[in-house]
Length: 76
Image (tube, rainbow, N blue to C red; front, side, top):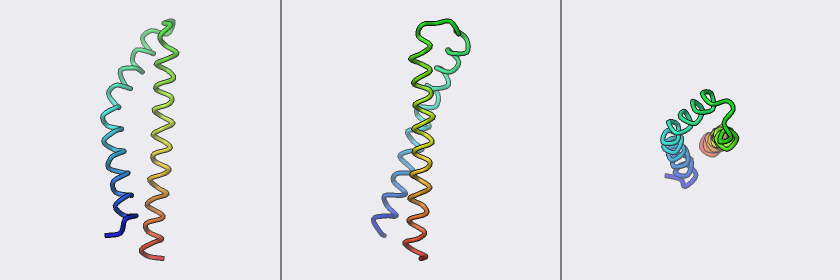
């Protein structure tokens, strides 16, 4: 098995585990933001949710890139 394939599979699986483990926490933070629109703690929770979304998108883009690179390596 090629190292690129192992890195791709490992990156995707570890990313899924991290995303799933953080999902409930982000849902709680989002519910707090919706319930308390005037809270001073809102900005820190909002930043955390936004950074989670940005990191999820970045993880997805890197995963797609690794999959494309793997396909190119094996079928190109």
